[in-house]
Structure formats: structure tokens, C-alpha cells
Length: 310
Image (cartoon, rainbow, N blue to C red; front, side, top):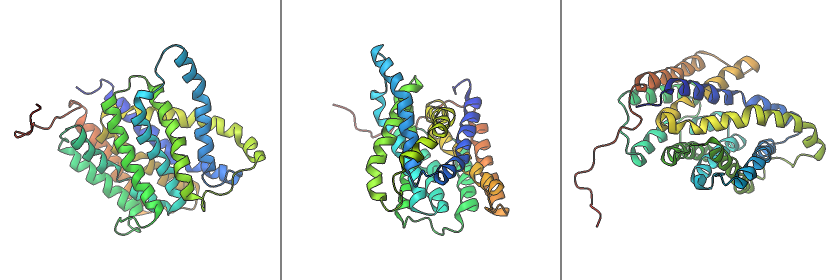
């Protein structure tokens, strides 16, 4: 059977991911305060590591896990998060969103291939609603979604890796949130070290020491109040609700981002945005409502001619 708090977890995934739709606002404030390009993002993950490191050392002294057994989850989720974040520096925002938010498609595909899970029939409806919503809200100006810029590929890789990481958490089933979160943070930083050499023209100059000191209190609050809690919950959730549902619910970030940008800036919000965001919300409702009473894993029937060991 589903997790006894399936609906509640789905709701909080939708809300937590939706909060990331407001993430552009602190990012804009950091840029205006001198944290140029991608350095504000790196600073946040370094602060995350600084916050978590004492806990990791304490756990080691107590003989507890710090996440090494979940390194694969960390590689996939951490790298995916950084590819997505950096895609906005390398391509248009709309293109980054379109390529990343193909994630529901990859999530369902990976469920079938790696978890041998037969998607429920409503999944076709929810994916159609979700991808149609993304396309109407932000994708009509992109044309055929074929990557043509480095940032397009970054957005695409981000969606694929996040979906793959969600599948991996279902396989590894980490019972404690901290080890998973710690590995994600570590590999966000490692991934940055590999990605930034390809982005030297867009990440901007390294912020001055004065800028770092001036922004440090804001960065600390942002990390402790927002980044760490939402990251921990969102990446813990797939093992509780399923990768496919997770892939659809995280589209709430797009909904909140489109609406908040229209309310707080001069970004347009017309019929396209209204219809698109409505379809995304409907996709989440359909997926949760039609799957709440089903078991978490619908196994595909065994292949009759499967090769026997020996």
C-alpha cells in the first residue's frame, strides 16, 4: 500500500518545490548586491556544507552513517540540481525551463526500465496535462524542443539526472534524511567544480571580500530557512510517493515562478500562462487522486523467455 501519509507528503512536495519558484527573487537580490553570475549559488552550497559538516563529524564519532553508501543518489541529484541552476546562465530562461521540465517523461520511463513498474493508466493523462501546460505556459516561443545551446543541454541533463536520482533513492531507500542531504550538498559542490570551467564567460568575476561579508547574513538565513529544509524534503520524497508522481509534482516550481514573476515584475501573465499553469496543477491533482489507494510498485509481468541464471 501507499505510504499512510501519501497525500500529505505529496502536498508538501508540491509546496516545497513551489517555493523554489520564488528562488529567482533572492538570486536577483544577491546579483544586485555583488554576488555575480553563478558565485551566489556556489556560496549557498558551500554554506550548506559548512552547516552540515559538524553534524557529519559528530555522526562519524558516534559510528553513524554520513551518506557514503548513498553516493550514487548524491551524484545524480546534486549534479542535476547544478546543471539546472547553471542552465539559466547559458541560455534563455524559457528554454532552460522547457528542457528541464521534460523530467516527468524521464521519471516515468526510468520507473518502467529500472523499477519494473507499470504506470497506472491515469499517468498518460497527467503527463499529457503536465507537458502541455509547460509547453503552453513557456514553450510556444521555443519551437521544436531540440537543444541548440549549451544551456539547453544543461537544462535537459538536469531533468534527466534529477529523475534518475529519484529512482535511485527508491532503490537505496535511505531511512535517515541527513546522509542523503549531505551527499547531495557535497556533489553539488563537486559538480560545480567540473561545470564552471565551461562557463568562464558567464559566471562573472569572483565577488570581492567586502561583497561576501555584506551578503553573508542573508546567505546564512537563506540556506538555513529555505535551501536546506526544502532540498532535504523534496529529495527524500521519491521513495515515499514514487518517482513518476514526484516528477509531476515538482512542476509546481514552474507554476509559482510564472505567477510570481508576473506579480512582482513586468513579466506578462496572459491566457497562455493562465492555461498552462492550470494544466500543470490539474496534472498534479489527477496523479495524486488516482494513485492514492494503489500500491507503490506495480510490477511488470516477468518475461517468459527471460534468461535463467546458471
